[in-house]
Image (cartoon, rainbow, N blue to C red):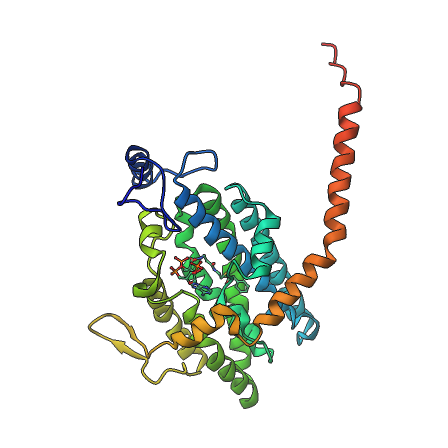
Length: 334
Ligand code: FAQ
């Protein structure tokens, strides 16, 4: 039956009213939905879309920072950056595994990324020309990611919520690592401080865009909030991020590139200037400075890894065949 009240976020649902109401009552009672539970098709598809896009973002997000591993200024910085990038690979893997519980394979998700059917975060289409960008990514990009992801630890879908708990712990280390790079640069020579300022100028607006379009242009928010996948709207989280980050820039002694940024006593929040949504949509649609490189790098990694996947599958087949022909293990005498 077509249900007007609980239409799936990615299309219509066939489920009848009683089924949908029962599902919604579980959500309203804050019960976690697990992979084998009955769920509306729209809920399943919304989660596959969001979790797989999140996983792709983590994996593509390794590329801008990977660019600096071999050029990190000290051994300590190199070790920390290597660990951070490795964590991001791990986050991608937990998230792919969470999405797989919903009935999509890793191969399908990868194909969707490589053909452009699935998105990944706009932020990773910007270049990292200086070392300060590694500081700005940790401070701002991980900072924005944490603001968005802490509420996802309470997402109604169990595997996603549980993956987010560990991911958020690691992201906070990443954020501090980035802020510490910025602090070191800002306490250094005027040239080093200028590098930090230039990086803030380039990353501030794209970081605000990470939270997604204005609420009025967000196609999925209403349904995702009703299903308690999202707990806050895009604009609410963006505002929380601005309010938390402006004092951090003041402490560093560098300036946000927004002449309209001003504390509003009335709202108890910062007012900010207009976000360039044309730039956001251009980047989301593949027109970012690094968009083509990011996808061709992922394609090359997928192609170059084919022999590893084939070998792992052949080995798993061999182990299965050996187990099938092996004599049953004798039961130990008491
Ligand atoms: N970039 O209706 P909404 C990280 C798309 S992880 C590209 O508001 P929704 C860790 C959206 O998909 C960063 N596309 O969508 C790290 C939709 O298009 P669709 C990733 C965007 O899903 C740090 C359309 O616009 N984090 O940084 C973006 O309700 C450092 C309409 O938008 C996550 O993925 C965007 N920024 O809300 C790694 C968190 N924003 O799918 C390395 C989980 C929106 O219909 C280094 N995801 N779109 O074709 C979410 O919380 C949500 O999906 C939002 C978007 C808030 C991102």
